[in-house]
Image 1 (cartoon, one colour):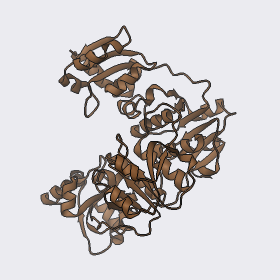
Image 2 (cartoon, chains in turn orange, red):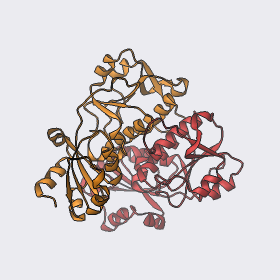
Image 3 (tube, chains in turn yellow, purple):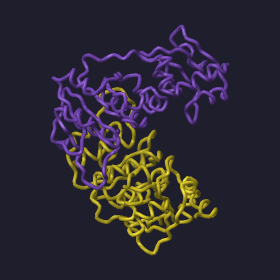
Image 4 (cartoon, chains in turn blue, cyan):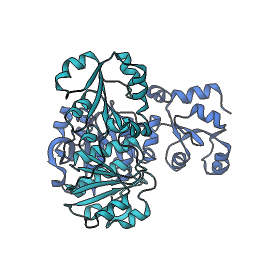
Length: 243
Length: 243
């Protein structure tokens, strides 16, 4: 069973303001909640169909509030178009920097939630342990980003910080800005350490931040498109610099 | 002005069946319609706000039916969340193969419209003149795909064909299947000609098609993600093989 107040609270977690106020966010679906259980995040409570609870109750860390709900109740609280068995309310982690991160992905105002989720998934694939977001980025803990990260949100450390400030604090590490008129990516070899900087979908990287980067890299354009999608560009740059 | 029948017809073009029956699809927004005007596609009619018509009437090929509509009418026919000045009804091209295409992108059941649009945009960026889709792919002429191709739909030739049949017809050309256990992408050099094969978002490439490919390529995984987004993988493979 679920109370009206619980429904209202969960639905309110769609908004960043409410997530920050309550210190909570939502994770949904069998696969994602299974990965969540094995992560460092602290689960506050779980709302699930009885079939899910029968299969998973023994895997959950204790103590944890588990609520049996109906399909209809799940539909009321779910942010998915096809609700999937279980929804967890999870505590946001305290913002903390990974000290020994060799490769950092720094996002400057990446605003599309789909791109943000896909970029977290890319970081997870390439073993990038840290993602730095400025205040204008899509919030990584919004339901859409969490789901499209495909579990990456549990493994990639996310730090909220001004890009220039971060670069200033790590001035000994080379930084690679993705732009439209830099060195062709394939002329730069594999890197051992670095900060990869990705800009906004339409405006690119803020000029001051761009000027502060030590390298300017470009994906060669062989055809006529004006630009590439920000997540696709991130994937190409990470592969080219890290593999 | 726009009639009820015209509204009904345009809205019906959201469905593939109706697009195929009428031989028409929809292109929206200032930027996209501007690129459309410079493409080989035949425009059937244009519905636009008077401010758009004042600026663009002399650029339109003649003869063409131009209808002045209001903001409210545009909202009724638009598939965009923020309708943008103009909507064009465009004739589908006859399916025709590019004979001298060095690089072809072959999609096996890529089902997400966002991925399909982004892949067309990638093909456009890397100068890939031809995209082959099997019947299970998201239709490239759906409103969502057209818009997310960012104009690529006007420059990349799209061919609807069974993948195995296409490979059989081009058996002299090497084919590169994207899979999870092939040769690391960075061990394969730049190619001059080839067919790049991308599979379904969750199932990958159909086994028979995969076995038929001459090469099996993999994006090295350095972290923990289970997979990469299909469009991101396409971008990485195209950059690595073509640049």
